[in-house]
Length: 286
Image (cartoon, rainbow, N blue to C red; front, side):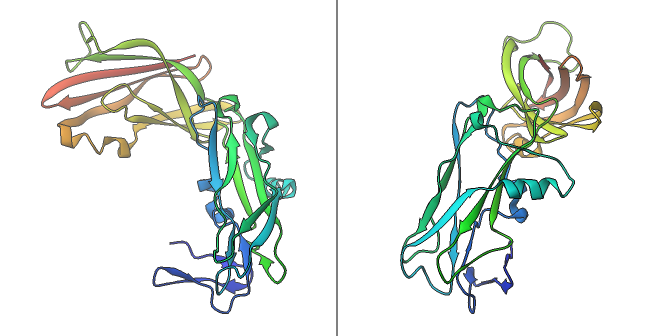
């Protein structure tokens, strides 16, 4: 559970509800703040033409809003500059081509504490997956008699660039034996496409071709643009259904090729399906 400090007042959880006792009205972006930074990464599939993310503004008080409370919000380039000044990963502002955000004011209706969902429209297929982008949106003004939270004034929507992320060609080969010899099965395919989707600047995930497409998690080191120390695993959350259908991972995944210069990655793992061996290779290439 997250305990939020809003301004100089303490907000605590009491029997599953938020207790604002002795707290003057405060406006905040409850989905935002640095505490929620990682949750505000935009992770829509980069092949999508359009998607929408939502956030909310809260009117935190000892009671619900006594009247319709109007709060102004807007893109905050000062917040972007302040974040970059911290000296960590550096972000450029979202290019106009990848988003639409036109909301300048929102209303917490009388008898409520939250606005409805405030939309940020994204155009993922236009995003350059190699770059770091940020769009901080902040509370600008607040109703008379209330204050703006210092910790939850801003939501930091951001996109994490990754040097190997992007759309790749994809071949998948399956053998119904333990060593990958002989003729592959008819379920193998060549020339499909998929996405190496970034989790952060040095981690991507991509589906494999076997049952329910468990994702490879690919990590590496980036030393001034020189990529090394590649490692691969399977996302454990994607394997939870396997025991129920009699599938067991028997070896791997193993790296056969990890070539960032030419954009080629090839991985192999083996499973037992109902006691029968399966030898599997996924290849991703530009």
